[in-house]
Length: 447
Image (cartoon, rainbow, N blue to C red; front, side, top):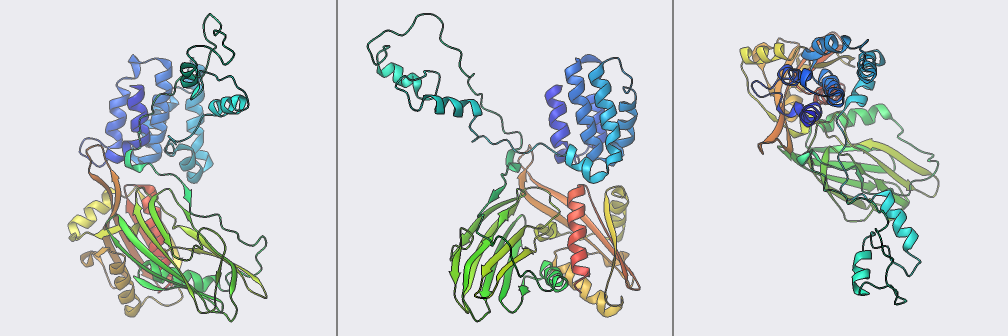
């Protein structure tokens, strides 16, 4: 029961869309075992219930009622847990999301602190600790005697660290480690940054819905991009050109790779590995092969640094990757769209944005074309002159327990009124909803 509670609390979302496996069903299955388990297992179950309340809004009232029963319980541990979990709601949704998010992947390559200490302690001595790696082999080679010909002391051996058991990979294909391709050598105090952030944001929004174009440009540098996607996989080609009249010194591309992507990076010039020289009129080319393996809401960030004869430059930019990049269009009729829309009413992310031009037929035509570029199928049957609705499926390379690829259905609806636009995204996963909302917001503000 303890293991089942942990697994459902951490990864129950992966099966929540299956019949009979909703968040409510998962809680009911666990709750029926409550009277039969010990106090430690009950604590694990409480944590699982709190995580479910964070993932599934439909179970929050039941979880709140359940935890409230234990706020004055005689068991101090259960009393403390219930009060702490009930008080989380007052801290705000972002804080709750951070506290109750799933455990990070376990690093199976990590060496224990105790093992490192033993290595250091015995590195400069002739005697070998037989309980340290390699020590048993040394004793066998000496025939059971030490180097001075003496027999080893009798009696029980000194107590050493317990053998490490192999840890099962509970995360499966979701395991991914935060990896940074390079730290780079950016200037300590960059003098020149992005001169026009609003223009950079518009270029980013256009690139979210376009297969190629200019992501950023000023008098010194131009960043071009080509990107294409099939299901959960994508290929991004980035071209950084020296547009100035002087060579770039200490040129680097600092490209941290987030854990929600499985990536392979190829860099002809080596700017992602350390500072290089970029001549006038030359380009640095970087190719990124990426596969989505988890929900995400924010695009990957990267920084371009270089020195000219007169100044130091540092530009913080974003790759135009969003959950919509890894989506496939889904055609639905009016009844299918509205039925699903109502089912996800409590799982939405929405925002009202101000645009720089009126919502007229030309604007809406451009917006619908952008939606097609983001691989969402428009559901014209539910739209009026100033609305645009679409449906897609976010694809990942992760697999569920049965070996099937994990995907998340996505709905979006955009409604214009004057210079205001309300954007609403609904999916089963709150992080995906937030990512779809941000992607369409960037596009709307760039039209």
